[in-house]
Length: 323
Image 1 (spheres, rainbow, N blue to C red):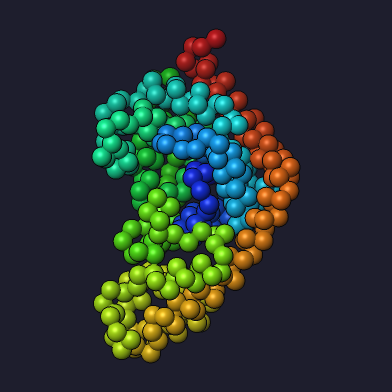
Image 2 (cartoon, rainbow, N blue to C red; image 1 turned 120 degrees about the vertical axis):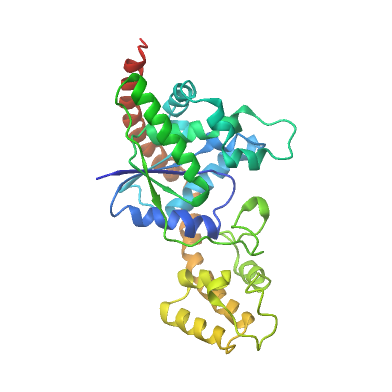
């Protein structure tokens, strides 16, 4: 069975874009892969953050992941900083990474734009990301289009290390998701907490309905009588996940024929989304109320991860000639 590695930052509550684009796929992967998932708190400190809130956000993220369906009996779930080998391998990989490769990373250019001072941590972010993957000798990594460049760097670092010190790491292959990009409620960019265009999975019903009511739809449909184009409407994209298939097909036909308005269409989506999220919310609440159980799950996952990481780093140190 191939090994899959994926992580998510504890940068706030899981939103619908995270859930549909990543975590929902993690749940499905448990059937076919040896899955290792982590809350990457070291990545979260590369930009400004509140140290007092980080621990609670990390637990919130872990609870949300479990509530969405990741099963600790079938997958390994842990917190990145609980396995110290992540940063050790990151330093080793830093020593085989040309600065030019890092300077070409698109995400670094985007996140550093407009800032006079940028941390070296943000610049080296892709190296730690590569260490996360290679530490477990993962062969598959679920990625979106915006992460393909980072995975290519990871593959290049595996090649560089192997060429210099001997065959140590496999070159991980991408697992591209079939889930379409989930655009934000503004319709201008993908869902992102920093852009404020999200619906959190813990969002109260009233808030879900209010946010969907004002969400961007097909810009060509200005009046109720204008025929719509469901294929370009982000609201319709979400129907595929929260509305049953028969009703979703009916909505598409009615939209094209101007038989249903955007207000009604959004109402149907809100009904399905509220029902779906309420189950996740109940599970999340139960996990957060039993914090000792949640911490025990994460510690058990960290112990499993450390067992793998120790073997990898013993091999790496020996190849480097370290005592």
